[in-house]
Structure formats: structure tokens, C-alpha cells
Image (cartoon, rainbow, N blue to C red):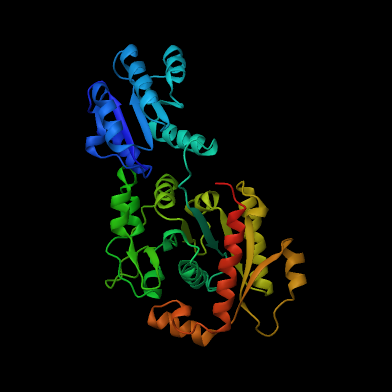
Length: 379
């Protein structure tokens, strides 16, 4: 979405423009104009949004808002010091929202959500699908890669793009599962989160032949050092804002650790797959994770149980699993160690090795069911 910004001087501070870019909005340097040049710019580019900075006299700022309101149907945002008289007059003049420049990042995010919820601007926010398990070795990364591949292959995917985000604490295996060597990592992106925009983020994302776009954590350094992890909840919130503007679907591999970063990602998610295993130790850990996450304010209803490695001998019956966890099984994924191992060694999703295998039908079914769940979600 393109935004035109006007103020008394035609050169608002770089910080404000950076915040606009951080929301995934397009704001070229020539889109920043002074009040008097606003009509010509609006006629030239037909923006999706207009922002009027009220840093001149109140009369000049209100006149700019009224002019924009007469020329364009795009929603108008006013920004400045939240004096009661200025806020009221700006809204009467045609502004839809007023931003307090004392906290512009939070104010802009809230204003955009309000406009979208009221239908005054189209929602361009993708959906976040997170996969988490408290059980090491249950195959969360394998599930994430193959779910992302199934979603990317679905003709219903808008623009055919799915991004896979690796939020395992580094070092991780996602890039090796796809035989990719990313130049930049999640840590690189998150270290610059306050100035992050769509162009910077796109430079860190690489594409796999399956159609998956990947933003990975660092793998295992050859020198034996431990990769840094610069992610924090604030950085992740900014990362999700941009990814949801850039992609219709974001698949997140959260791994096994229950850190504050993982909890923040779960809060941001539209769908959460809780990957488990139908044995006593596995169910105990899933039960513990559920209770721990509920304690952190997440509702049990957010979680959908996915049983991986299903079909082995001695596993607990479905009815007992559902009774023990007080939740329905959303999906089962069959055991196929040989095919999974081949896919991991070759760095490709399962569907690129054997499209007819039963496990691929299961992932296609999981993708279909996840889509159905997302259609019921209000962003």
C-alpha cells in the first residue's frame, strides 16, 4: 500500500518515514511533500493512505486535511501533538484517525488495524501458522517444511507465495532440510528491527525450488562457535508485521523451547499446531506445555493437536489421547522413516521425492484443514 505524507516543510523526519516503511507501506522520497504540493502528488499517484503531519500552524494543517479529503477517497491520517482542539478539528476536517507522535509506531499499527476492521481500507495481512512441540525429536521442522511445501503447491495460495520462518534457537537445521545456504539470518534481521522495512527483509529471504520462501536461523558454524540470537519479542512483532504484509501465509517453526520469543510468536499466530506423539512421555510433555501456555494467557482452544509418527506399534489409542489432553486430535501424520530420511539427505520436501506416498496425502490433507481453519479466523 502506498502512502503520501505531507507536512509544513515537505521533509518530515526520517524516523517517521522509517516507521511507515516498517509497517510494510510504500513511501518513496517523492511521496513526502509540503502542504502546498499535496494536491498535485495525490493526483499523480492515487495513494492508498494519506498522512498529514500537523507540525505547521493549526489552520495550515487543517486546510491540508480538507484539501486531501476533497481530492481522494483514500483514508486520511493526521499526526501531531494530541491537543483536544486539534484532534477534534482534524477529525471534522476529514481525518479518520489521529496519531500521537509521542509513540508513532504503536499509534500507526493501531490506526491501520482500526481502518481495516471498519472496512475503510482492504486488509493485506497474511495469516500466521505456527508449529510447536515440547518433545525433542518429534519432527516439528519436518512438519513445518512439508506443510509449507503443500501450501505453496496449492493453487489457492495468493500469489503462490508461502514463507517459512525458522524461530528455533540457533543453531538449527531448517536450511539444511532445504539444502539452502542463506546469506542473512533471523538474527541479522532482528538485530536491525527498529529500521527494518520490506526491502531489507526481502534481501534476507531465499527461495526453494518447491516454492517455499525461507527466512532461516543460523546453522552449525564449521568453527564450532555458537551462533548469536538477537531476536526479542519487540523484534518479532516487527518481523511479523512485515511478513504478513509481504506474504499471504507465514509458516513458523517454533521448535521445542518454551521461551518468551516462542510465547510471543504463539500470541501472534492465527493457527497453532501442537505436534505430539501418542506415548506416555509424549503426552505428559504436551500436557505440561498446554498448562504452561494457559498460565501465560493463551487459550486452550488456540491449539490443534497433530500426532506425528502415527501408526507405530504400542501407541496409545486416539480416545485415550483425547481424554488425557482434553482436546480433539486435529491430524495424524504416518510414520515413513525411509522416505523422510531420503528427503532430509537430499534437501527437498517429501512431495518432490514421491508425490504418491501416503505421507504426502496426509500433508496435503493437513494443508487443506489448516486453510479451512484460517478461513474462520478474523485477523
